[in-house]
Image (cartoon, rainbow, N blue to C red; front, side, top):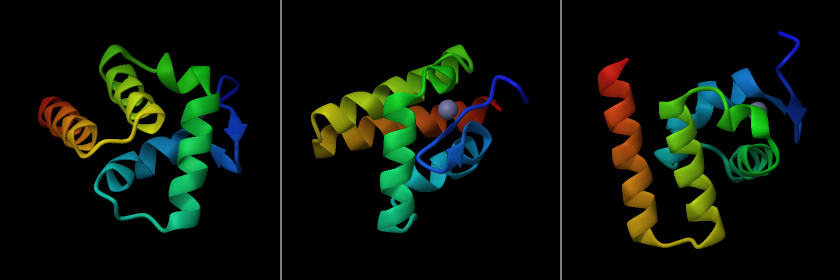
Length: 85
Ligand SMILES: [Zn+2]
């Protein structure tokens, strides 16, 4: 896909595949930090869709100001998204 970007060694589709695992804290520290670098640098991921963008924006907020409460909000956002898919 031409629009897809590769940032921090991850393509957008790869970030999408592991995003739920990232939010659940199931990724290795190395992969998790690469997901963070990608999401922080990639505008395309934010434009992927309204609901996905909400998850990404929530993640970016969490990374900017990491707090357990933000983490819980991101997880709830993601469960809501999964329930609609
Ligand atoms: Zn991306």
